[in-house]
Every structure is written in C-alpha cells, then in structure tokens.
Image (cartoon, rainbow, N blue to C red; front, top):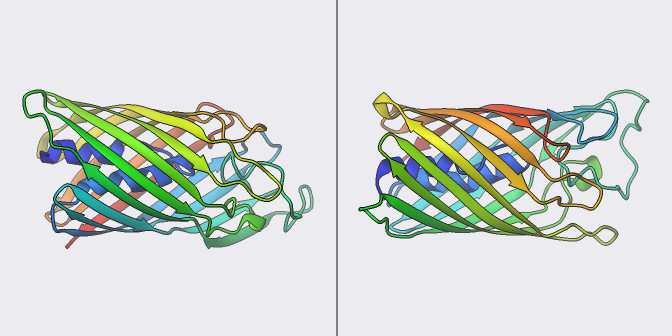
Length: 272
C-alpha cells in the first residue's frame, strides 16, 4: 500500500465520543511494517445532546500501535475531564436514563469529574492494493472495554464490539475514502442499547511536502431509543514535522442532537 493511501486511513472517521474512538482505530494505517507508534494529544468537545445543560469534555488520548506486513494491532486509553451545570453527558449513549443519582443534581451548582475513558483494542487487516485503480481496502475489529465510570457519565460501563470495513481510492492529488461499520453495544442490567450501522464519506487533498487537508461526513443510527442519530461534518489538516513525527488537527460540527455541538483537537504521533 503506498504511503498516501495509508496516511488517509487516519481520516476515514472523525469526532470525539464517536469521533475520537473511530480516529484511534483508523490511525493504524500510519505505521509502516515492523514499526511501533505512540500517539497523544489534546481534544475538546462541548454538547448538550438535547438536554437543558451542556457538558464540556477535555480528552487526553494515549495510544500504541504495532504493524507487521498486512496486520496491525492497536491499544488506547484516554484521560477524561468533564464539567457541567447539570448531569455529566459525554455522548448520546450517556444521555440515556441513569440508574444512579448525579454527583451534583441539575440546577444545584457546577460539577466536575475526571477519570479514565474506555479502553480500545483493535486489530486490522490491509488487503493488497489494486495498483491500476489505486484502490485499497481495510477490515478492522475493535473491542471497546467499559472502563469509564458510568456513574459519573464518562461511559456506559459496558463492552462494545465493532466490525468495520474501509476503502480508499486515489484520483491524482485527491483521495476519496469511506467506511461502513456495525457496532454491537453491550446492554446494562436496566437499559438496552441499540446495535447500529455507521459510516463515513471523506475527501482529502494532498498538498506539497506530504501535507493534507480535507473534510468528511460521519453518520450513524441512533444508539438508544431516547437519543437522536449522530451526524457530524469535520475538516482536518495533517503534516509530518520530522521523519519520526506527524501532527494532525481537526474541527467538527454536530448536525444533530446525537453529536457534540462542536469538537476540536490536535494530536502528535511518534514512530520508533
């Protein structure tokens, strides 16, 4: 797979909540055969998900990747810092009815919580590219462990399984990308989460010095019966800053109550 095709896998899915986890899965394509990679950064989102109060979330991701020939492995766990004048709600899934009382009930002062997010473990297989059409394909399986504290609104506390396929096609200096995935969500003892189809469509323009800029649309079915279907539009920029480092910046706008009102962030990836 040529480098332009593997780099664009980074941008196949975008956002925080749905976006950040998806970005972690797709960054696997940035690592060459036999390379280790470490990723970290700073990401911020804000949204009310159709509730009276908005939650702000600061996220510090940590991820490690290893790639060998057509396979790659990935593991990550973020640190989360959230605050709200009402219930802490960090995604459309955590806006579902809660089984525990809020740390600070709505209308009685601002609450702030912090803790680890959900751990993500992924494995990907990259199919041999068709050199004549410059098209490449990827298949990824991810397990999201419910390590985030559900009582504080940082997660659901349940394990989720995701199966995702991606395709990338090059047109001169442009790259068209897309994914289609199915998410099997774990159910809590008192609440059922929907299993959903999701996907993305993106367009990337390759610039000089291996820089890239682009936009993409993320969509999904509603993950609960009391939340809206996520829909987000994002723009991004990426460039290498050294032979062993690359930076990535993005800005996302939620187009429904199932997504954050807006998200922005930047990450840096180190190669060894």
